[in-house]
Length: 214
Ligand code: 5GP
Image (cartoon, rainbow, N blue to C red; front, side, top):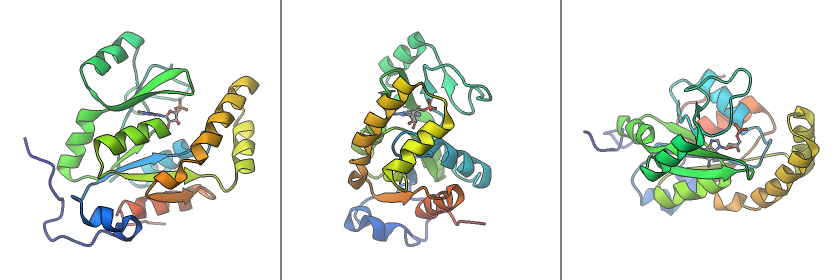
């Protein structure tokens, strides 16, 4: 099996190196980027836009214990698993990270596919929650962490109410979590304001070193 190695033999300058300063310059090049941010900020929409317009970026497919929503396809949007299967995966050490999200269901990133993509030198993106992002940072310090932020907190409230998929109680719980999550932005390597989905996506892929297209 091949080891993960710098993808480019001719050592092209890393377009995002300035953002990281010395930390990246001193470390092994990595193609792993984590996208996190508060509830309802549009992480799912941005990653769907990456999937549609940048097929060269590999998107990790998480395992989750929640049930599929209409239109979600097993193996594409998530691997939908039961509690016993999730337990078995945790025990077998199959996750790069996992977390209970919004106090309800478990979500985790299967490790083997991530390692396989990194070995191929293909840019890989994880769209996960803040607790997961922190675990990735601990496990893979070279991973680049991107925080997707709303233009304002009021806008976040408007989006959460507007999408109408949560009960009032659930909304209150998610907004309380979001307030805590917003305070974590400065732990990240880069902050992208989601004022426009395509613009935010283009900024994300440019940060990943993938040429943005229109
Ligand atoms: P949803 O149920 O709306 O698809 O996702 C709920 C939340 O779970 C989102 O904030 C999403 O980022 C997060 N999430 C999805 N997959 C993972 C994962 O593999 N690990 C972690 N830690 N969070 C995840």
